[in-house]
Length: 387
Image 1 (cartoon, helix red, strand yellow):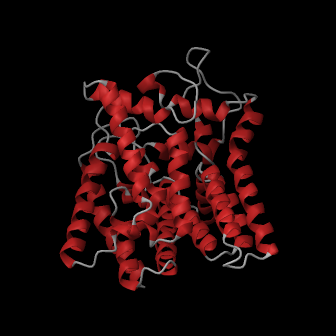
Image 2: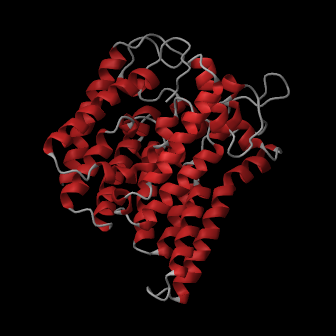
Image 3: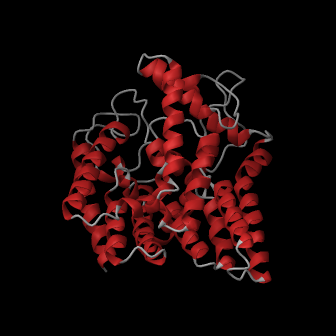
């Protein structure tokens, strides 16, 4: 009940903020001026998910010049829009309120499971509850009540991490399957499970690792990898293009750096160079050096005493997902949203007991939340900063 009370209070605050922004929103590609809440909550990728729910995926890839693939629905996995479609069928609600309802319910579930996860790794009631507070007021938490797949994905991911920590491998198979068709991070979870298996195997003399658990966990790692590749394979079969999914994803970064091929571990260097040279007007190598330093500091922090308190399995996930992002993601305005699966780190931020610190960090999160809505969600003409 305390977790749900925290969640509901945070949603009241965020709803007020979103309504203020909606009242001041001008005409944009998705709505007229001063849209109502539900219209405002279903802009940006919400339209793509609506397209998937209502019309499915194109059988041929669109192209403006006959050579390069343009933005299309294949970039958006079907788990969330199909769930919203099912809710629409049962409740007879239109797309917008049904999408917001699904996001809200899933986000509440994610908060509950996250609390259980923090307790399970031994953070204690006070720290775990404050971690939930941070989860609910985080700068990107408005996504919990708009037409995006993040709420559903975080619910599935938190459940998967809890099951992994509790070593209930059998239950993980269906969760991993649905998760792989909600957000594209199946390969990252496969790596985390693989590291978990290796860790348990190395420690098998100090901590029993029964043959049944060996088989289940190893099978889970393989299954996670297969499901992580399933959507690109489905897109390839449906469109006749082997690189349909990656070409579609690359279309979103073309306005920044032009049409390129996906070369693992190069996007962050390309992004650092672009942000430094194009946006800041400084030499590109400065951005690259800054990016390398940030990655190095983050890697060191994973071995800090505070992060170690989260337990080895959550650290495996944080490392695996971070490596996945470093390999394939191009950093731009949606980076803040893409970092949401690193939410277990909120347990570290919640550890200090000082009341002044806790009040200050909540106020800071709320201020940053307003900033995120202003920069990323609110639309200002030909907006190039999508959430």
